[in-house]
Length: 290
Ligand SMILES: NC(=O)c1ccc[n+]([C@@H]2O[C@H](COP(=O)([O-])OP(=O)(O)OC[C@H]3O[C@@H](n4cnc5c(N)ncnc54)[C@H](OP(=O)(O)O)[C@@H]3O)[C@@H](O)[C@H]2O)c1
Image 1 (cartoon, rainbow, N blue to C red):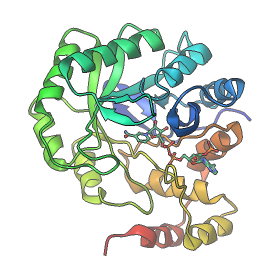
Image 2 (tube, rainbow, N blue to C red; image 1 turned 30 degrees about the vertical axis):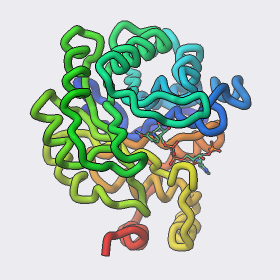
Image 3 (spheres, helix red, strand yellow; image 1 turned 180 degrees about the vertical axis):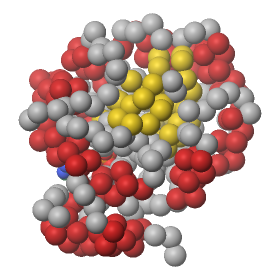
Image 4 (cartoon, helix red, strand yellow; image 1 turned 135 degrees about the vertical axis):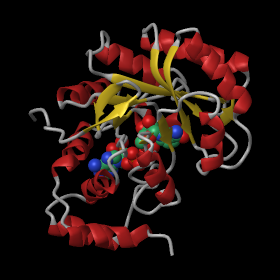
């Protein structure tokens, strides 16, 4: 497959990335824990993402842990000049694969150094502080202490830009009083629309909104409306779901995850799908808040 002509970009920190990227979480083993089932296939997915022209990869050192970043390094280092790797810190993995908060200054510092070492880079381009007050839905609670610690790592030159993940509007406001916030990464897709108003607000402020679980995550999206729209467009349901997100707002950056080259190609090509207004409003009806 030849490189895809990505139609538009958005400024993430001080770099422009194409609005369709790739989320690397699915490359680790089952439950995002341990090595992949097929290491060669995982490396092939990463190389294909770059060959197709993607220049934004989302990762974390707690995927595996360490596994996903080590795969990225093996597949892609030395990295293309235009590639922006975005990572996240704020959690650690228990021996039983559980996700535990890791918010102390010491844990955050260790996480930044783990990411630098495993990705083999000197500076992390964008680091999201992943709030753990709620698991996949944010909950209120101050982020001042951990964000101040991350801002100190930025001041030391280890981190270029800072984002927030799994946060409420109040936490974003609190964060913006501490340091510049270049992106917000929250749970959002066709069927999960709690951040509708937030997306518009961030668009007005030039802040990227990066939906995680764009395809539904561990329980991929299923809807007869979605399947019908996709069929009419001779596309797959996942492509239609991504095309809807792509049209949703200009500050939305897509990072669909997959462990399959075939799905990767399908997903990145979703930017080429022309979504007529009628399809857009049918898809809109799936999760539009009452
Ligand atoms: N900040 C956070 O807290 C947070 C949380 C979760 C995820 N993330 C980030 O967001 C990225 C995306 O999320 P995600 O990977 O969890 O979920 P996702 O992109 O919503 O969906 C991934 C799931 O969809 C399947 N899939 C992908 N493309 C498909 C296609 N074309 N047809 C059929 N099935 C397809 C994948 O299976 P196959 O592997 O078989 O394709 C996988 O099961 C992650 O990679 C990660 O970087 C961040």
